[in-house]
Length: 491
Image (cartoon, rainbow, N blue to C red; front, side, top):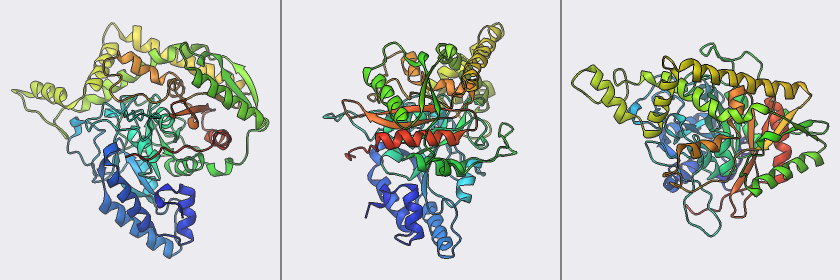
């Protein structure tokens, strides 16, 4: 029999229903795997007692014929999601010791559907990063390695812990968040499937905020079907989140077998960027060939404001972050570093509690919102954002059903290789993903191939707002053509 931790969520549902194993046995297998893989640093906190208690309840429900949609499925939860009574710190010292007394809407939905919580997953501090090296708990290590090399690689960020845990079989699936590519980029780096839903599809309530107009929760999973299963449970309307949209959540699994015959797939010329590796270009061409062979038609399109997306993003996101993070002052919760007076206490706490990248973005954001610069930077960036969204609207109005692009400009890079580089070089990792967040659209990253060094590369599909079913429909065709990719165990 396949090792329990290697089963997909679809396989887990079938195995539990057939009594091939119990939820408790499955959870114990994952807890052993987590213990053996602590060198990857995917988990900040493990919750074995809670997990076994939840698994026992799942076994009781299965025996009583009351199984729910995710009954007994062990999941990892990104540290950005508040979980009742459990460490929730956004991987930052500033929230040291914080254990909320409430549950985020997304995780509450998962527990209501019977999922089991294995622990809280590592991430870039406050989701600010593209490599998972800004965490106060140290970097996460990618389970993939280049052929013939022992060098440690980044898993991408900010949801690096989620991507590594899924790729290394340390959970059956994981929650993640995407503000500028933080689900899709790490998914591409680890040969997992990452979905950034439409803005408003999943509630943001109980998720520690980075940039409120951009943040969106989504799943990272082993395959497209598992991602569809997870998003079905994660998504909901929520009166506690005013950006939550009251649109029915479809049964996404039903779309998986529909194929792409007759669909028109847009190929944006602006995504052919200078310096793109030949392997990424070749993979894009292969993806087009797979979809064409499956009956779709490729259509060249233009998204002319794409080149402005990254600079506009790095004005809007830090501006919102500087506002959101102003609440962390050492007074009500988290870290407090005393000073001679309240002002020095604020200064000491924030200086000690925030990491270098978070401080950089707070300062950028405060600058662009300051008197005399607000119109020149922030308002102009918001106008550019409107133009980016208009580009996509026009493409979809021209009967484009989906858009195909690369997911990342490169494969995973080495730990600390960006340490001496300009922050701009790190930010360029988001070049293919930020447009989706700026326009509020859904996108998926699907593993599609390997580099000559044996590292994963992914393709991205972008669709109309709230048409996630089309993401899964198209992504499944790519997955079936490309096959599945698993790292060789070394940890």
